[in-house]
Amino acid sequence: MVTRWALVIFAACLATSAWGQCAPGIPSAGNPGCVPPDQANSPYYQGQSAPTYTPRIRWADKWGAIAVDEATGKAGTVSASANKDKAEGQALARCAENGGKACKLIFTYHNQCVAVAQALKGGAMFAVSAPDEPTASRLALEDCGKDCHVLYSRCSLPERIE
Image (cartoon, rainbow, N blue to C red):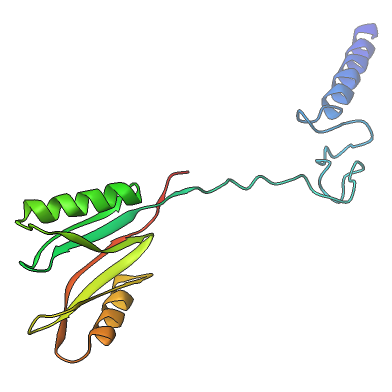
């Protein structure tokens, strides 16, 4: 009989200690439901929820450039370069590699798209940048006028790094 009462008392002690334990970080005293303190129905609720973490997003700029030798029509282009100076240098070097003797930069752009239009018979080139290629092409053709076509279009959009 004594052993039976000892078992009942022992079981009662275990049950109360099991009910009194909440997950780490959640107070159990006066909180029988183990409700987190940032919830409105918690006895520890202070009227505000826990701060949320919003990750910071970082972008790397991307540059593009176009160089042309107007006398020969030779050109050099680059897109998605890490910086302006590098993009311009690479465009001039590619123009020279393609046979240009007097290459000049005609357009530098970053974090957007570019299009270059020219009349079918030649002449002046019209370079325009815009958020996307179709818009850049449309605007370059509008600036160029009648009987023009797009010679080149490309994007140098920023790259997410974090």
